[in-house]
Length: 182
Image 1 (cartoon, one colour):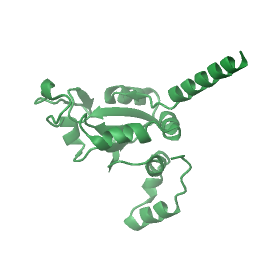
Image 2 (image 1 turned 90 degrees about the horizontal axis):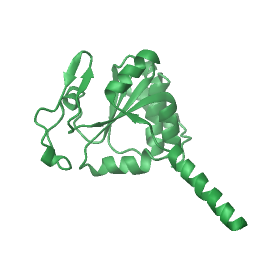
Image 3 (image 1 turned 135 degrees about the vertical axis):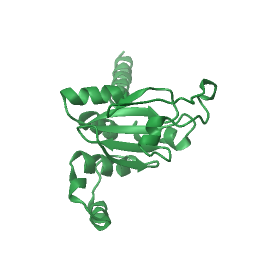
């Protein structure tokens, strides 16, 4: 009986931990609306359905407990399909994907107008926005949790505002000590 009880407790604890590790993804429109009530930066994952590194980012980085906890605490997290059919209103403009083809939903499709506006040219790209919804910077490519940690923290703390040269960023990069577990 003790083994069954301990087993059930372990299953419950692992289930709870798995739930706690998920990023609370919302749409861009929802994030911009939430910023009006409670200003917070936005972290946007720009992906496509066919992108292998995007799937790896979802599985290996966004499922990391440290990444999920940090993103949920400090950012509004937006998941945006760069070739999807979602309508986005940003800075008084409405962005669509007029050439979207539903029969190609899981293959290469036409680029969304919002992806073009953000100048996303590779997938995955993570775009950081300030508390007013202005673009801070895109970060391209697959990143492991500790690699993403550097960007999450530099933008959240506004340290990037102090850096005006590549050398200053390089110094920050060299001295950065990650705390996220891989």
